Picture 1: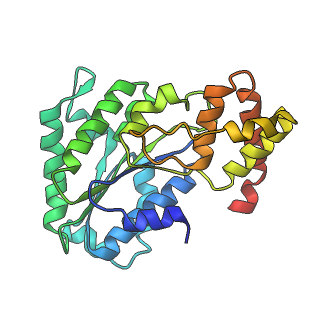
Picture 2 (picture 1 turned 30 degrees about the horizontal axis):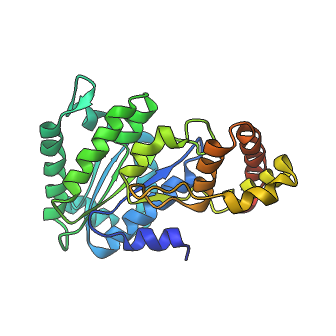
Picture 3 (picture 1 turned 120 degrees about the vertical axis):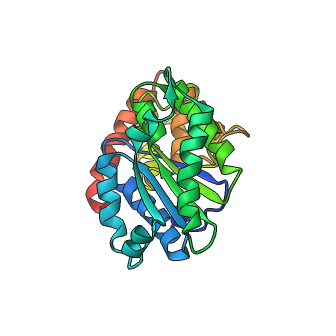
Length: 263
């Protein structure tokens, strides 16, 4: 069992994890499915706030669990549409705190009241919808409101953002608020670190030997726990601006070349 799987299985109250994904969302759906399936096994309430495409994918995944149909019939597992739910509490381009608490507190209370015990596992894509529209400040504010809500009950939360970690938007200045809002950033892929190191060797040549001891995680006390590969990307963007694009482009080639062996 991977460290990521163990984390998702044991995720506790007030913990708030995030997964970044690019054009390929298969790993995202696998991780979310595992997180929610563990909740079904435990008898937790399950709240899913997702886009139509991902609701379909998660329904297919969760139907493998014998307890799925019963949980739906009992109202212990509830699906909500991310766009519509956002529309219920967004005011002038920002989430309204009172409306947010009203909408989400009611939804969480509903699945909690029907759970075998008081635990709730929630998956949300509303912040990802805002991010995709370029409404990054609204997404950060929504994360803050979620964290305030998590303190009031036995709830753990899994969020997702459509961010490719090898693209320019994944840099410390852009994702600082995102990392400050979560307890853990889930790894995109265990093979990414190998691809990055191989690309650094090829692009930097002998220079890489002097640089490796200098590489730090760039971790800040307020940030989520960041996996090694994602931390390395952040370090490269911050410390090697002249070479980072070439390194990441080469890393993507190696990473994608390995994709058939990982699927």
